[in-house]
Image 1 (cartoon, rainbow, N blue to C red):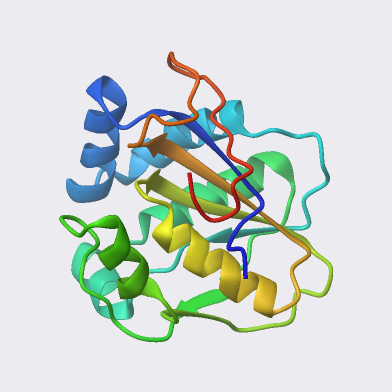
Image 2: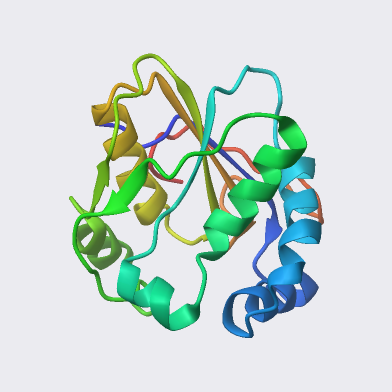
Length: 183
């Protein structure tokens, strides 16, 4: 099953954007959620109607340790600004090791079956929000769970992308993939 139908990112995970994401995510500067959500909105392609915004979930232990889910704060702010409802529809069915340092193959295996949807999404177009997309393994696994629950379309929106394949260059460039679940 294809994980997602399309994906957009604000820019590349480098330079100032990378520093901002690291301050937000690892230094716990929650107030960065508002300006970073502005970047997400700049990358959002609004040709189609969205029914629901869903953040990529964290395992409860990691969320407790960090103190917040960065994707959830971003999704809440995008929801507030667009008027599209946000819901915590996905949950981690099992704890997975961090994806950092894993190969593409190992990343996909690591998150396979790791996410579950908590409700039916019959025919809905879901916007899946995360901070960084590396190989697309996590958002693909999340998207597959959303589609198993009946979502008609899953669009991924991230602040940054690490892989430059199929990417126009420059800050604010809309990066899109129609290679459902992979780049």
